[in-house]
Every structure is written in C-alpha cells, then in structure tokens.
Length: 294
Image (tube, rainbow, N blue to C red; front, side, top):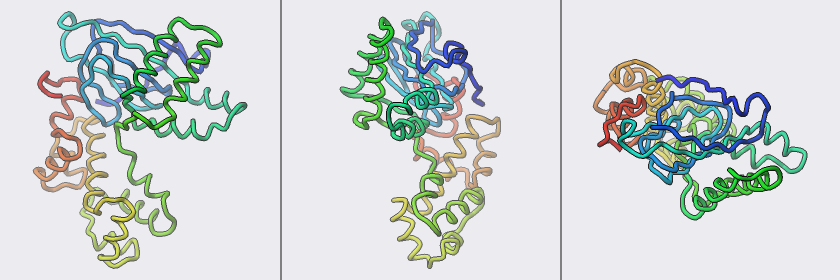
C-alpha cells in the first residue's frame, strides 16, 4: 500500500501557518497518504486502527496524536458505516516551514525546527497534557485573530515539553548513530546501510570499525545500547515494514530481500520488534484487519 501525496486545499493557496478543522464522517477511511503539513488529531468519536509511519495501533475516542510533515498516515474504522458512532475528529494543521520562517523574526526557532523534524516519528499525547491541549483545541474553533494566535502558541509550548509525549516510531538508527562520533562510526554505519541485505558477520563489522571482535562488541554496545545482531535486525525489520506497506512482494520474498534466509527466524524477529506478525502487519496496513486484531 504505497502512500500518496495529499494537497490540503485550505492551507496551500494562502500559505496559512495553521488551521483548525472539525471533520464529521460516517466512518474513518481515507487513502494512506502524507502531506507537508503537521497534523494534531483528536478523536472525538469512533474507533479502529491508526497507522502513522510504521506504527500500527488501535485508536478510540479520546486518542490524541501528532503527525509530523511528510509522514504516511491513515485512520481506519473498525466497523462499517452505521454500526458505530460517527467518525468525528478535531484537527490542527500546521505548516512547519511557514511557522518557522515567521517566527525567525521574533525568536530562536532552533528548538521548534528540531521538534518538527523529530515529529516525523509520530507522537501520542497522554495524561494532563492531553487534557490541556484538547481544551485549547476546542476553544480555537470559536476564536479569531489574537485570541486564536495565543491559543496556537500555547499548543506549541505544550508540544515542546517532553512530558506525556510518547514516540510512535523509532528513529532511523543508522542516521542517529552516524552523527554521534567521528571516525569509525560513520564508516561503520555506511557499511551497514549498504550491506544489511547480505549476511554480515561480526568479523566483517569489526574489521570495518578497525577493532578486534571483543573490543568491537564492547564499543558497539556502548554506542547503541544494543548488540550488533539486535541492531542489524532492527534495521532489517524497519526495511521490511516499508516493503510490507508499499509493495506487493510476498512475505517470503520480503524476508529474503531484507537479508533473512530463514523465514521462521524473520517472522520471530518481526513479531518481537513490531508486536505482530508480518501477515497481520500487512493486513492492518491495507485496512483489512479483523476486529479481533488490535
């Protein structure tokens, strides 16, 4: 299920920095899509399966999530129209480039730009912060001018504080560790990126890093808090998730494409990391999940 680009007509023509919109539908079901705008979504009523990037989780009324720019996402209802309450959502759309450019004249936007970049992983918001943010969202529906702007700034302020924020997707491991130390680390990460589909041995990885195997194991665990084998599996399974979402390859073909010659081992690794089998993951991504799957 390949994600398609979506143009948001209410924002694009005027380059509005943000927009609050309430949507009422018989059920949640749209194409798996992405857009350049960030999206804060509060589910007023309805339930089903939510996909943000590689994260697939159940949602219900009260769910509050933040989707970063250009992140594929979709909400699917769990039942047919008429079987459950209407699908009602309240969303705040944010154009991150316009916001950052405007605020550059007033404040240091480094933290804000970093948040928008990090939000590509997707975020769920819980606890007291969820209550504060949703209260502001409801108020924004009726506000204009300075009052509306003040409420928007309050929401940004809430989002920039890490309390009650949970990331939905792990960061790109190779990118994260490529920039953490000079010398051998970028070289090693480049080697993994270019060869993770092959049968990389510990000896090969140690050699690229210029270390003996025992020293390499200590070095790698200290760097990533993972064994080399676990790290390699996470990279491979991350790539497998993309193929399951965006290609028609069979699960066996995907396993082989990701460097697994043993299909049973691939299934175990995938389930350990994603908490579901590749088959269920693909069905959920395509919006074909059974109600019993959560």
